[in-house]
Length: 271
Image (cartoon, rainbow, N blue to C red; front, side):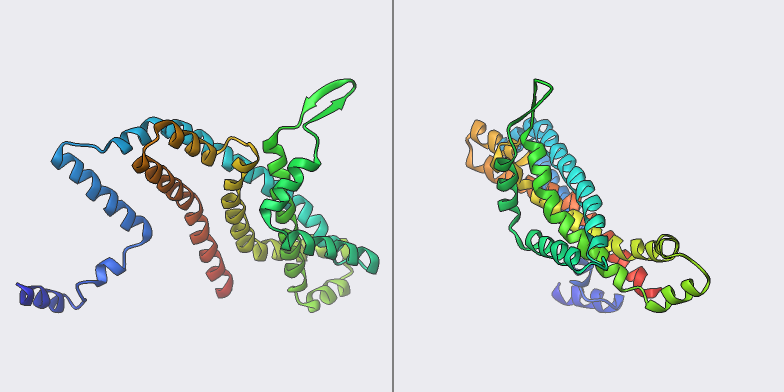
């Protein structure tokens, strides 16, 4: 029988293990899930841990929605602040460049968890406006804590994209009587945006994964929901399963971003 397998693989012109190696992570995950479901159908049983996971899945979904919302807000704030900082880092004034680049280096190299704790305790728990106390929620502090490193990274991405534009383009545009603002808006910025997009997407995926730290400062997110579920069910197999599910959810959200980033990078290299 082994010889039959060898003959069939040689006749097809490809080794027997080649098909498995060509599977994408999504296909391998789908095959594994199909095998598990087929086993349950054949035996007529479903492990209790999966029943609990199905029961808690709406709460986990709401928690993941909170993580995604935090990541989107943090990235939006970080992008706006980073574009401003990136432009200021190229200022003709040496003092402005020094201050901006120093702050960028501080936030780029500071641990994300430290920044989250910093924003959690440096900002008040409520703000008084016209005699009215407005709450300052923990999730907003997490957004600010993640926006700080995001702004520093975006500033460096933006500065590098601007400096990658050949100086000949500036000179050619100036010879055509374009102002500096017109050169930046019409010629430089469109090229910068294309070059910034792949690293910006990678940064967003990183910020999304960092939102898992939000539960450490009292924010209700998917990790906090998983902890509550694990403590409530109090089963070791369910605890392992629910955190494995968190890995799968973050992978399912971030992996397509990574694939799209690589596709954009390859497209940029061709052009």
